[in-house]
Image 1 (tube, helix red, strand yellow):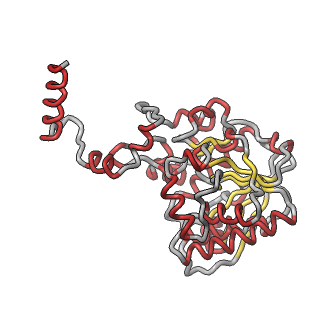
Image 2: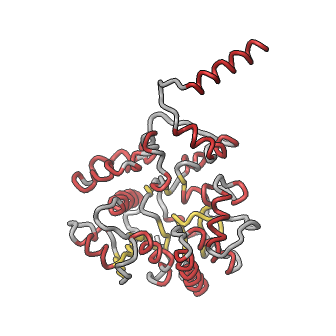
Image 3: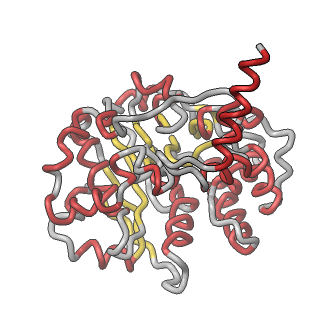
Length: 322
């Protein structure tokens, strides 16, 4: 495998990002023992990781950058990510830490694209369940995305070592820093702006390379990289949709290492909650409404409410009329 694997990691030692990366790298090694794995981090995080025995030895290469320690860990991680093309030599496949590798990745060498990623939630922008929120964020970073058809998830990116890609990442980082000043901490709106500004060089990557847990059901059977998306965890009252959404579960990595997660190394799908429901169509859009959030906030399993009673009477009357 000629293409490097790249992880970006910023950690305070009190969060769970190092634990996520630990599991992701181990799952990668199950399928690609000879892959060259690079870690891009900042000096503060490197000092934290140096205190964890054997952690940095997981990587073939560790690239350290000095960043302003006054910046939040989130912003520091995004600055590293949007600047990663100019920090690492050679072609690479960037992979977020909240992932598990479920198949060999060596075929990435054969893909013709210079710069590629998977659509966010596996859909073009017009069908995205968060379309209106995305349009709003893009406006705040300086892009009218109403006519854009593509919006990419930045969690997995194929990036060849080309002059055009170096220039693209310079633009992306500049737009990201503008977005931060506008209060937008996510890097994807600025990625969309850079893509539009540069004439749309980002090409679609096959969906199996970034199978996003809550929306990639049709790709689970062929997934190469399973992206469980820690930022999209279910509400606390639901319990975790995926085992690694639970910070306490990830905390076991520090005390028990890899042993409790051997089942996930063999099959990432074993991490899903035993009781789940697959939704599609208008149900997805309903779940994004204030009406749903209001109703959900008042629901308690096994507890009847006046509204439930009135709806029950209404259903009964409708049935009687029929």
